[in-house]
Structures are given as C-alpha cells and as structure tokens.
Image (tube, rainbow, N blue to C red):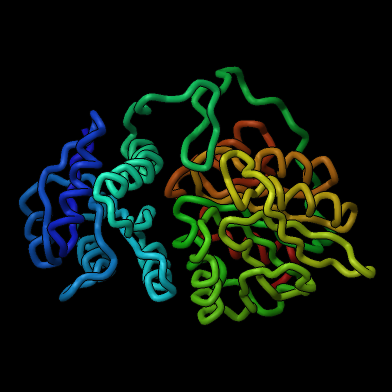
Length: 362
C-alpha cells in the first residue's frame, strides 16, 4: 500500500484530494495537515510514503516543507499541487529542482465533482511513478503500453540485441538531451556545470505541460554560464545556448538559408508525450547527419527517445545514458540500455565531465 498524507491549508482541497486518492485500491490516506508545522509533526509520527503538498500556503510554503522533510525523511516522496499562474510555475520549478518527484495542477473549477475527477486523472499518472519508485507491482497495467508516465509493461525478456559501439566522435556539432521524471533536479545539477566554452548548441526536451518550461529556462539561465531559453519558432540555433522545448508542443530543427533554426510543431503526441524526445531527435539526426551528434538520455519514465536515439546512432551519432543508480526513475535510459544503444552509462555526478570530454572542452 502507498501511505499518503495530504497537505493543504483549505478544508475543501484536503477533502477533494483525499477522496480522489482514496479511489485507488492501493492507496491509504493516513492523515491530512493544514500547515507545515502540523505536516512535519505527522511525518514524525507516521510512516508516510507520499506527501501530496500544496505549493502556496500561509506560514511554511510547500517548498519549505519539502526542504525540511527531505533532510529527515529522504525516502518520503513529494508531489506538489500547483496553480498555473506565472508565480506558481516558478515555485513549482523550484520544488522540482529541490527534489519533488512531480507535480499536478490544482483544479480550479467551481464544480467539486469535476475537480475531484480531474485530480484523480492527474493522480493516476503520478501514482504510476510512485509505484515504480517504491518497487510495487504496476496497478492495472495496460497491455503493450509505453508512455511518458509508465514503463513499457510488455517488454520482451530476451537479451538485448548486440549493437556495435559507435566510435568516439572526432567532432560534435550538437548536443541533444531528453529527460522526464526527475529532470528539473538533474538539469539543475548538470546545466550550470557546463562551461560557456562548450562550443555547440544544446537542444533539450523535458516532458512538461504548457506554462512551466519558461520558468525552468529562466531558473537555469540565472545559474548557468550558458544562455538558457525556452525555444521559439524560427530561433537561430547557435553555440553555447540551451534551447528547451516549450511545454505542450513538439520542437524540431530544420535548415533555413543555410542556417539551422528551431521549428515548433503542434502535431499529435508521440509516446503520449508532447513535447516528445523522439520528435526532436529524429530531426536532429536528419539535419546534423555527418556533422557529429551527441545524444544524452537522462532520468524519466517510459521509453520516449528510443526511436530517436536509434535514428541518431544510424547516422553515426554517439549516445550516453544516465546510470540506473543516479536516476530518479530508470525508465528512459533503461529503454536505450536494453536495446544496446548506449555507448556509455554515466552517473549524473560526472555527466558534465563526460560531456566536456566528448566535446573536447576542458
């Protein structure tokens, strides 16, 4: 069972969230709390696996509760409930960078029943991630499914195919990164450690809905020697700049007037993801063929990026993945590793060193 505490300063949201969680057969809402002080006392008195915590509350904020709790209860998972305004997005990104597992948007409609159903729908995906982190059997697995919020549930048990290791590239023209669950925390560590002399553009897909990637880009930009921006259609792709795919829309690259530019595509989701790593990586493989592509797959649920890495490897690119022990969820890297497509598995702590070595940036 997943033992849950709901933290919110309003009675209504505590009730709605508790009822939505209670509809799952493997969830037990142990307690609720109306403030940070009460939440910390109840964490001390109960074994809690998951805290569903409002971001903005009087007294201790959700981020402050997270920071204190992580010191004493590092195994307790936090999922934040957030509004959708700009300030809420900034605080949500801060919580994710400080170790929150994920977030859901707080329903803001006037109908309690509709709010409860919306919350339940969002919690379904979050609880899949929680089950994986806790090592629990998947709840109601979908046959042959692969998505942003779940590992493939019907993978073959046969050994992965033997794939010839790619030669270490003599030159790299672009770095392409795909990441999902645990991504903001991983990126908050990795991107600020990359030097301004990196010499190549960085194209990045972080699975995230609309309204949040701009805050992620702004936060990373303040901490990094590189320029970090939420990509816009037609942006010229230049070195020492990180282009983050906007939430809720696919990002690609294309050639225009002999230069590489960003393209945004409002097409259907792939792997239930939008933006999707596969969409970006396929375009990178095509545009940068023969010029040297380094792909990096970081922590995340599902297998988005597998087809894209195949395309990049087919065109002579080089692939590295985050090591299982350093992932929040070893899903996306595992999909690459299982297919024998990773040239090297690297701990997050040394990922920046490996990237700089391959880019010959010291």
